[in-house]
Amino acid sequence: MIITVLSIVVILFLALQLEDKFKIPSPVGLISLSIVFHLIFYDHLLTDDADKFASLVILLLPILLISDSLELTVKDLKENGLSLFYLAVVAVALSVITALLIGDTLFAQYDLSVAAIILLFAMVLATDPVSVVSIFSKFQLPHRLKILCEGESLFNDATALIVFVFIGLYALNGGEVTVGYVAETSIVVVLGSALVGMLIGYFGLLMMKSTENRIAELLILILVGYGAFEISEHFYVLLNVFGGHSHMHLSGILACVFATVTVHHFLSKVILDDEMRLEKEAEELQRESMSSKTSGRLIASAIKTIKATVEERDRHMRSKEDIQLLAIVANTILFVAMAELINLELLLKYKTEILVMFLVTTIIRALMMAKFAIITNKTDKMTSVNFRWWGIMTFAGIKGGLSVVMLMMIPSTFEHLEMFKAIVVGVIMLSTFIYSAMLLALIAKDKEAFIRDIEEEKSLH
Image 1: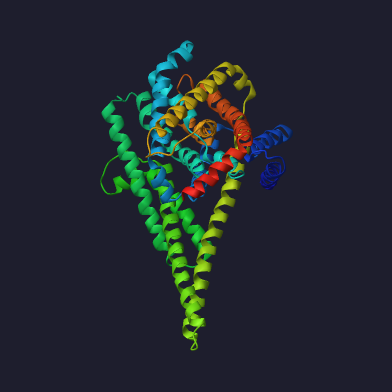
Image 2: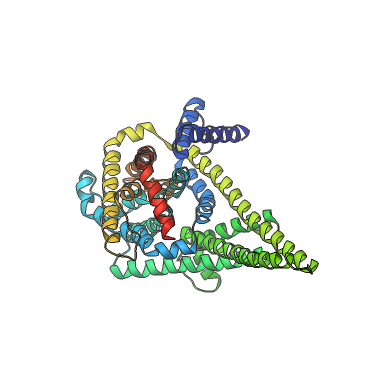
């Protein structure tokens, strides 16, 4: 166990060094170093099979979601809500429909069913917000472009998982998929998850009012995120307790995101209100200082307000930093575990299928982003996307561990499971290296143009 801890720390340290000194994105560094460590030691530091990896992802996923959600604001969601809805819902739905139209042609020799095609494409449509945020954090990019890519990565995961579980698996198990069923299930899951998340978030806020301890605030943030995730994933248990007799569960991803955004929004609002009150106090203090009769009580009150505001803002910012540190460690653990899943023989056996799926999903994503760009340039209600942004958004679709979690939900009796395992792991590897390299190249190529975009964005606000 100590060797495992030492290895994870060394891998993370070296990956951060590569990122700082050579601009190599941390996901690329982490997975490359993890593979090297695995080849050198020929031992499993964390997992020895995909089932354990899936359990590990579910354990660590909420902390990654909490970290990414703390970067979202209600203002950003309102301003870009329509755009994010298209990217995370409409684009995924259109991609699945496209997959159904070409799936038989791509995998004709396997005679895949409609349910199998939906499962396969849902797994490789899910993106990894951690990788996207990690790369973007190192560069100066327009705020709205970041929101579109990072927000899409967060909500895209929830949509892909809903398609996978409530449509793909449901059909695979003999369920009848109709337009009414899809619409009803989607509305119930999305609205239910959002409601649960916001309720848990409000509960967390009440808990935070009972303490001024920074560690306690950090623990409440973790409780809120994990609590919302767990309650949503096992919502049927809660229903059964109250006599509901239902097997329905919601989206843990969506609930965790909404819970964290709720807490972050109201904490930020309190800090903003305190800062405005601080400005008023400062003005009164300045006027009082110019008076011949200076009030000691007013000065003491102003000092108290300043101290309370600074402490609260500092506490919240440090909690965010602590969450980010936990997320970095969690991400490292996931990449180390993912490297141990790589079976070169299996990947080589299905190399053609992997390459075909990677190229096809890349083309589909490029087309969906191009369609989005065309739509946004015809309306004022969505953020306009130019050619530079289109390239970034296309290659921001890096795949991650959630795809493997979905893979583990497929029944072991499924005849194409081996091929699906190879395709999912292979596409994750290819997207991590190739998409990351493309993002770096595109950002470097248009660096000055992006700076101009930033200046234009600032002038508009």
